[in-house]
Length: 333
Ligand SMILES: *Cc1c(COP(=O)(O)O)cnc(C)c1O
Image 1 (cartoon, rainbow, N blue to C red):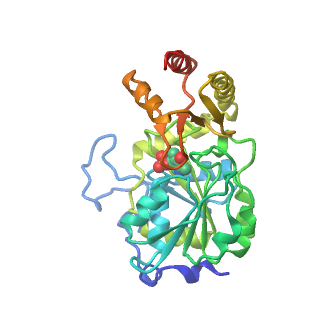
Image 2: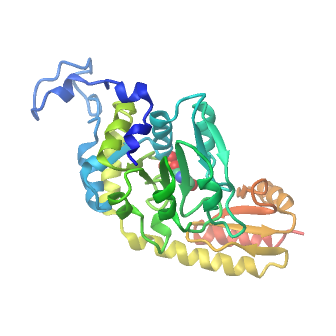
Image 3: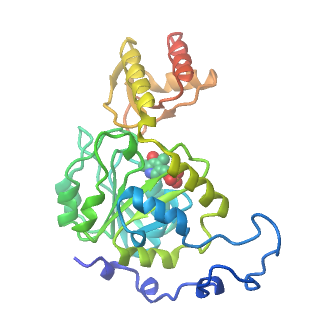
């Protein structure tokens, strides 16, 4: 399958915006082209390709620079892909709930039909039902939010689904399993998204990463606003990724296991779904009441009962925060 045939015709034909700065290849010069203020620290527009950050990320991820696109969070990457491939009012996407809700939110904004193929009872992909549908983009979130587990059989989908497979790896750094990055060699219809928002601890920064075949990345770059990643963002992200230690997630994983053990000892907690992430989905008696009780005590968790009956999704916090959560829950009656 050649995924380039799936691109919206107007996007395939689009001539992207090009600044005078991009057309000039020298390093230093007198820049009188972009109506910037001539002095200051952040007076200049940032590099549209975030070149330094991109080269460091490519080396860390194990891909080439032309396989990367950076976004204002991975939410922006989700949107770029929909706008590159989805013809408004005509095309469809597939989501596998319970999962991350932004795929469907963007589909509504972009006027794409959203086909829902729920995960199976053990929160795995329903491969036959997915393959029975036709759609431009299939969203696979692994590890999945809110269920917390890794999804299996992604390669079967890549082999058989006749569209783009968007694999969201927002939580991959917490998982004992590796990124599926090496599948990019065999499957040109794969787009992987990663983010600095979760294990890298930089949700406030807004930096998302799209990884795909260079020809797909080139198309996504035509849609990208030229300065979507600010100079400050590029600098702080560069520092953070250069200093990041993969072992930094280990204390958090230990905290998660402690939290799971303590919650399991509460009589009205029915089940905790196994998690490879920094959150847990907890099934309990009267989740709505527990949710309101916690909110009234200024502890905010996520009520996911609409998707998975009687569940709250709890993010693992600091040891002190988790301690306070448990102490508060002990007072629930
Ligand atoms: C948190 C999260 C993201 C992150 O989005 P950003 O825009 O990068 O902050 C993406 N996908 C999933 C499944 C998430 O849970």
